[in-house]
Image (cartoon, rainbow, N blue to C red; front, side, top):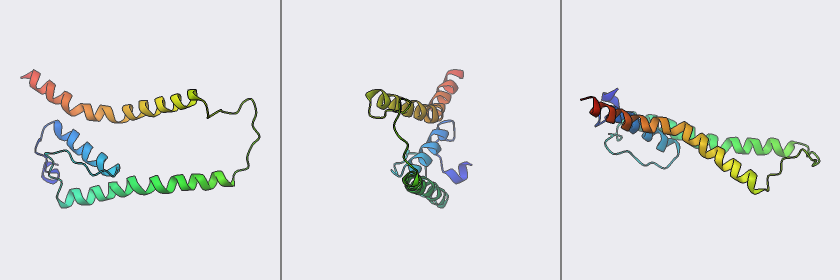
Length: 123
């Protein structure tokens, strides 16, 4: 809805602008993708909801998990226990986090520039 979004680029690049605006609001860093008229009532209200959805669950959910783990009875260590102090575990965890992050964000971030390029090639 270009009238609400205030995009300076009504084409495919607008997808990247809107996605970046909401992602930055969710991540609480407040950076903006220039060309987006984000000083409007629409962006202020919707980004406020997105900011709250990004900030408070990230604080409350780990506290709830910690409380549940504190109540849990500790099991004795055995041969089948997962060793989390090893470099292999750390590298595997980092690799999984990086792969999942790329799979979540790259398709949308690449969609705008790729569609712009394909539009220019088609002319």
